[in-house]
Image 1 (cartoon, rainbow, N blue to C red):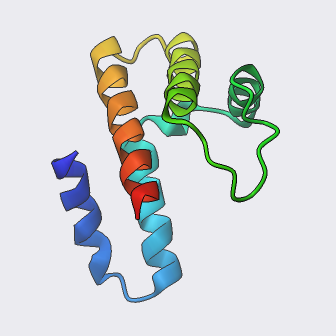
Image 2: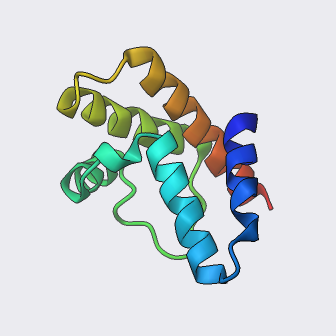
Image 3: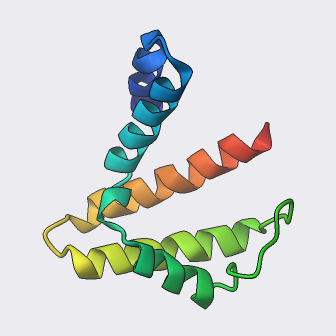
Length: 105
């Protein structure tokens, strides 16, 4: 997680805020293997975990977030069997921690 935060911090020198945010999201996407997820996968995960009916401002319990990430990374593991399970588990844990950290503030 600290390595990822360090990599994201190196992008702070990008002058334009929109580019900076886009670069950071792309870095997160690649490091968390979310680039292998599809909109269909995400839609199915949201439906399976009951998150499709959330409204702006609703609070997502950590157990439901963890379940959603488990389902999503399971779908990615099925779609991309060449990825090592240890890598995906680390990415899933990192994603969970990132969501916790991002929504704490």
